[in-house]
Amino acid sequence: MAIGTIEKQAPRRYAGPMASVLVVDDDEVVRDVVVRYLDREGFESRQAADGEAARRAISEQVPDLVILDVMLPEMNGLDVCRWVRSVSQVPIILLTARGEESDRIIGLELGADDYVVKPFSPRELTERVKAVLRRTTAPPHHGSSRLEVGGLVIDAETREVTREGRELALTATEFDLLWCLASHPRVVFSREQLLATVWGYEAALDAGTSTVTVHVRRVREKIEEDASHPKCITTVWGVGYRFEP
Image 1: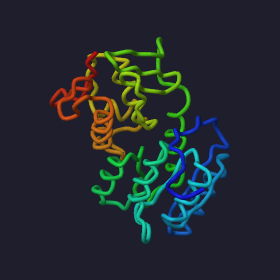
Image 2 (image 1 turned 90 degrees about the horizontal axis):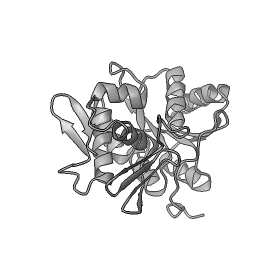
Image 3 (image 1 turned 180 degrees about the vertical axis):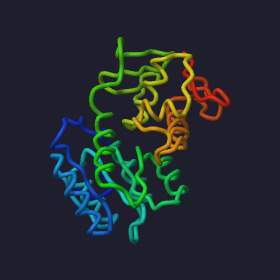
Image 4 (image 1 turned 135 degrees about the horizontal axis):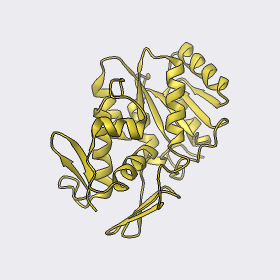
């Protein structure tokens, strides 16, 4: 199968251990340590040392999640992230250097679900993998699993979003963010509350509230008729965001 021509796919549902993870890093020691921790938790792990190898691996078999280093030789991690999002909604966790906030923001804007800053704890990375994959399984809802707002339909059972009958491609994190807001209409959520509810992290961790800001922007670009003048997800200045039914 030619690289770059695979059919665009949504991520498979995570069924606990045995989910597949592709670890992409040019440092063999880092790859081996991460794979060892993942294998210990029951994941099926594959490795790639550069961007082209990652593209080949994903083209051959789309994993359940990709751990992707930003600083790769030749084709960097951001270019790989951009390519992955052109062919799949598979969750992506970026590995970034400490202090390189611009890379983290760009990665999130390209569709990465999360990031971990180097040097990192392999145990923390493994927990992040579990957290992201959990967001592709049971929908985080109470009561009705289907919301209809105007021409927007959000189905938590199938994790699908459509507008006027046209399916919108949201990542697992983008879906959960939208569901959190839409299932609590007119309730204002601070960035810290969304970070804790959707990502499961305290705001003090390196995920940062900028993660929420970028993801809100991405969701608006997909669901709003005019993302620069949002009507569904509005900003409450100095507080956070709310969903307008």
